[in-house]
Image (tube, rainbow, N blue to C red; front, top):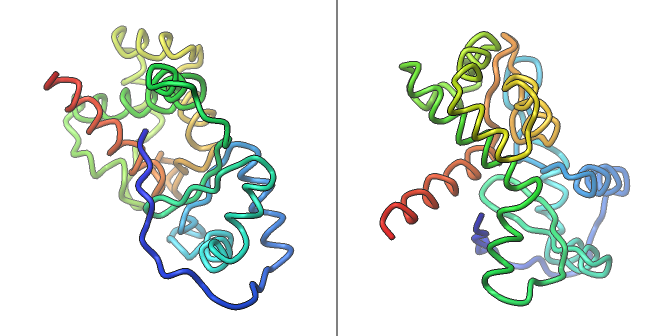
Length: 206
């Protein structure tokens, strides 16, 4: 996955940090979760105070604070996450690093979801609209496809698709369940899926 820094005017002056929000953001980020710009609450998307806190004091405080702990605070379109500051030695190692572990599992589940909903005759928007989403029954149907099962197994995912989506996406705040119980991608999920789409387009042209 690629990271595109957002152009922003750095804040000046002394930072004003909300300790409660700062601690909660740190807990979530270091647990492997992302912090999206919005949260799904009572049937609608509302601003996420954790995102607002990081956004407000990113340049004056948080970027350096996380760097001092060996982490990079990464902001992408609509969300934050952290990664280690330790850099791979060469391009091959960088590619292997990006393709391993949690990232690979996220890509695998998103790939299965994207292909699955299209094969079921849905528009991709069903995955991104808060009032729509993909039902558990549809996830089970998609997960029964042997090809999709092989993709998940290749990513070291042994759960059925509904459980895999929860563990890999929902528990990391990359997706959420709406009031109908349907799965919907959060801001981070949309960006990660766009990354995946661009990667496959690029690989297909090589």
